[in-house]
Every structure is written in C-alpha cells, then in structure tokens.
Length: 137
Image (cartoon, rainbow, N blue to C red; front, side, top):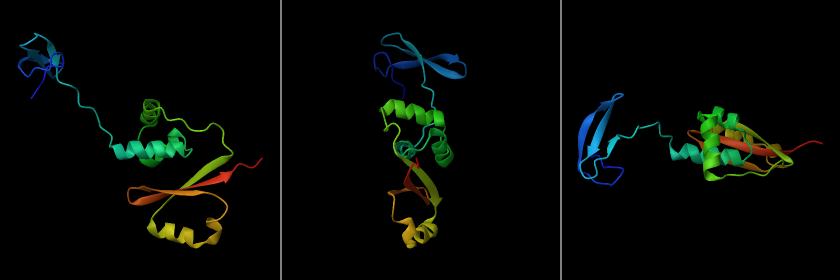
C-alpha cells in the first residue's frame, strides 16, 4: 500500500509510469510521487563489524578486503555515526583470519599470549585475531 509522502494519506491512485517506475497521485492533496527506489541494504552485522575494525586501527581498504564491503560505504558509516579513533598511537594492529582449529593452535603457544593485547572477533565461520605491537623507534 502506498502512502503519500506529502500528507501521509493512503488515498492514492496510479498516475502513469516514468522511467519504468510507477507514478502515483494523492487524491487528498493532489501531490504526484513515485515509489521509493529499493537500494541494496547491507546487514547491520557488517556495519557493526566494519566500525569495530576501524576503531581497532585497520584501514578502510583492509576492512573492505576482509568483509567484502566497499571502502566508500565504510567511510560513509564512519562519518554518519561520528566515529573517531586516536590519532597516531604507539601501537600498530596486525591481524590474522583463523578457523577454530588454527585459533586453538595459536593460543597453545605461550609466546603468542604474552607481550601484547589481543582481541578476537567473529567473522562468519572464522575468527579474526587482532594483536597490538608497539612501533619500533
């Protein structure tokens, strides 16, 4: 059911087709409008993951390669939600994509556990391990 965007009335009739899109006329306010274009909707899961990875220090292009979402979309989300990360930290994140068995093997070694912070986030059926290492001067 179409509703007039001008007056929110549901008293509308068809009024022709323009550029393969149905046009409507509101009988209450005589306003002409077309149906909204349905764009590609990206799941909120990917928006949240992209913003998390951005805050963890990954670049837009790195996030694009990992999630398969355009870096321009990620930039727009960062602007939209006003996300800001610290500028020029002393730590640099490195990341690995691991499955469950590889993740268990990684943490079985004591050398991988000490010396730096580690964050693990789920990426579908795999896990992303982000480890911070201090920049060498």
